Length: 416
Ligand SMILES: *[C@@H]1O[C@H](CO)[C@@H](O)[C@H](O)[C@H]1NC(C)=O
Ligand SMILES: *[C@@H]1O[C@H](CO)[C@@H](O)[C@H](O)[C@H]1NC(C)=O
Ligand SMILES: *[C@@H]1O[C@H](CO)[C@@H](O)[C@H](O)[C@H]1NC(C)=O
Ligand SMILES: *[C@@H]1O[C@H](CO)[C@@H](O)[C@H](O)[C@H]1NC(C)=O
Ligand SMILES: *[C@@H]1O[C@H](CO)[C@@H](O)[C@H](O)[C@H]1NC(C)=O
Ligand SMILES: CC(=O)N[C@H]1CO[C@H](CO)[C@@H](O)[C@@H]1O
Image: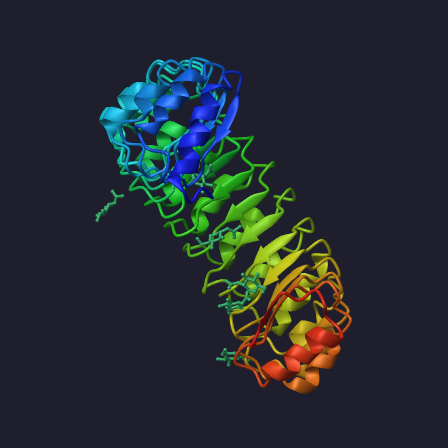
């Protein structure tokens, strides 16, 4: 935003005159340098400071040491920062939120945070943090939100999680933690969201989630979780969003989810899921988002989808659907996002069935036999903003005509 550093100098001088300022944001500014940060030292009333993606501030945090009223600091993606910089934050005991993802900070830097007893929200995503840092973090007992995604965690130190009993949101995604780590999560009964994306956990680990009655969001994508583990989730009556994409879950496991009528969003992008599994989910009539992207659902299976009257988003791209299958979803009038791509036998008839889904905002029927002649069926879809018909028999010229004549809200269409 600020292209000339001269402007920044003037602005920083101006800030000095505004000692009452409580909120300052300089996102993505290379003009904020360690030297120029001297100006911040005068802002004794500052409560909010946003320096996200400021890449020249190494050495400058020292000028924040006197800002005792600071409650929120965002230094996400300031990858110039080192452990020494973090020592300047150790006295900012009013801090409630500290966003420092993708900083090159290690356990040594994290040790400087141990006195920040009022921290509620700590984001360390992508920092060079190991289990040794959990010792310091475990003392931050006010924490409600802790993001440790893409750190360097293993099972070492996981026992320290037990102290963080207030935690509502814990993100451990993309760490090398295993089932042994989850043993120490089991008493965090206030957890509402748990992210274990791509962790090395399996069925045995999920037994530790059984008592997490407040759990609403569970991300298990790309783990070794299979059908046996799902039995431990069957009592979690508040679960709303579950992601099981790229797991080992099979049809037989889905039966264990059938009582979770609170479910709103379910991702089953797994090759081994078939119609049989889908039948087991028929009771989940509250679903608003269902992702069966790579699942092998056939026309017979799509008849179950009729139950899901509240569906707003559906992905069905496994390659087994014909026009007859699309007929089964033609009355799901709440749909706003529909992806039927990669079912090459779909024809213009499929577009005819879709023509009543007037709430659609995004439609994808790429890699099919849809032709220019079928485009007329899309004219009623006045809410469409995105339309993808790539690798079909549709030309860019005809699609453009449809846009100009009937679908003025289209902003993104292919081919173009
Ligand atoms: C963790 O941090 C990343 C990066 O800031 C963010 O994209 C993600 O949404 C966060 N996750 C949670 C659960 O807060
Ligand atoms: C996880 O472990 C694998 C080896 O098992 C290693 O290659 C990888 O770097 C580790 N990742 C992290 C984030 O520690
Ligand atoms: C589930 O996981 C997949 C793969 O990691 C991801 O693409 C998707 O956005 C996740 N969330 C939902 C709600 O499907
Ligand atoms: C499928 O298409 C929908 C609608 O265009 C889109 O929102 C979604 O991102 C697509 N899914 C994938 C995995 O590309
Ligand atoms: C349509 O779906 C395909 C996956 O089959 C995806 O690669 C593409 O990005 C999607 N297009 C849009 C606009 O969402
Ligand atoms: C039933 C049917 O014709 N399925 C096809 C869906 O599209 C994929 C390729 O995208 C084909 O491999 C399937 O045969």
